[in-house]
Length: 146
Image 1 (cartoon, rainbow, N blue to C red):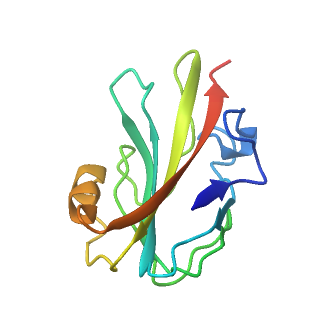
Image 2 (spheres, rainbow, N blue to C red; image 1 turned 60 degrees about the horizontal axis):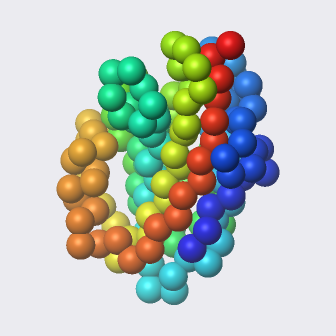
């Protein structure tokens, strides 16, 4: 499985429109080579460079396994968004206080849908995914505070 974005290359800077203090718009994600036996996809976006520790910017699950693109402006109706470290249930873009931070976009192919409420945190999502992950892919974007 592979995840890419037309908005930035792996390891390269993310666009300003994706920043929290920009338009706070999710970058578009393109997903390829999803395993045929996948029942759903889940996405976790986090910043391990945050001064408060690993910071969760977006959680979403129950994407159909046929999903080949997650656009910046919409989600399928069956997708559930969990609670980020911003305390919201939607994408929260980069907002580093200083320096360059790395934003990890993890896409998981799961062998089941997840019956979880929107109050679900990243730790709870990761616990619920245990034993259900068939494959995963990662895309890393950077963002500089200056």
